[in-house]
Length: 56
Ligand SMILES: [Zn+2]
Image (cartoon, rainbow, N blue to C red; front, side):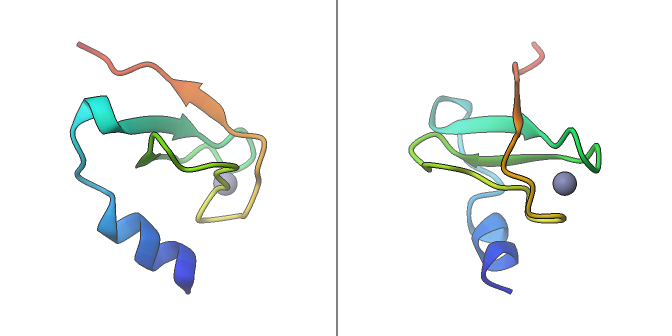
């Protein structure tokens, strides 16, 4: 599962380098690198993700 490998590798980046997303389909939240293009949900492959602002 390449998507899971990618997620594990980028799961703890600094906030400046990461974008937090929420999947409107399955409701999960996860983090991707800010320079990743066309991110998709690693759980259900939905690509219509919502960006989530970092809290605090
Ligand atoms: Zn999803």
